[in-house]
Image (cartoon, rainbow, N blue to C red):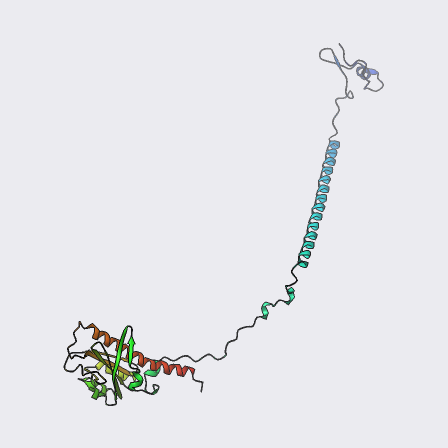
Length: 310
């Protein structure tokens, strides 16, 4: 079998050695003939520059298509956003117009700056002095002082205990109303007055004595030196007590005042450590004397604090 016969002529003129071979073709390895695909000088070489330019042109077209598509998508999204904003503004306007007519316009509501600011006095109030400032010195402690004023009323209630008041007494001769060494102590430290009152409860009796000095230092010194006791005060229905029998004494001081007690039984019997009623009565009435004296200082301090400035 033969191939290539009757094929086109590839050489010039179709004659000569090259033309003849072009007409007949080249003989194959098994006697067949292959058509000659190019000039007799050898096989054809591809045009690489043309192929590269065509590929680049296709790539540029694809990029322009992507850019154009992105621009179109951006325009569409922007149009949608603008439509939503316009719609929202339109809805807000409708809601603003639809609010109840009873509410005042916004511009008429009071602002934060309209609130009044607090004002304070330019002059600070005077400090309240301590009560002891008046109790420590006779120069400041000038309020009237008497047994009736210091021990008012007909009884005193302390906790659940009620003590009936008996006789009252006052003297400027402090030593005359004492027993034992107390009189000398009072006189040595300048006692100017001794006030007494007696209270009773259920067969017990207590006399409270308040010795008045010129200064707190004198009262404190008398307390430290105190010996003996104040003389019990009978009368106003109270019999003599705490004479020639054992009784219980207390001694204390505040400001320029020394306050003491002597307590026992109206039946004239000795007081023992087991007689708690006598101890309680003495403690109660000693605390009562302190409150009465301290109250003088509180009243004087309060009056000074509220007095107009000079």
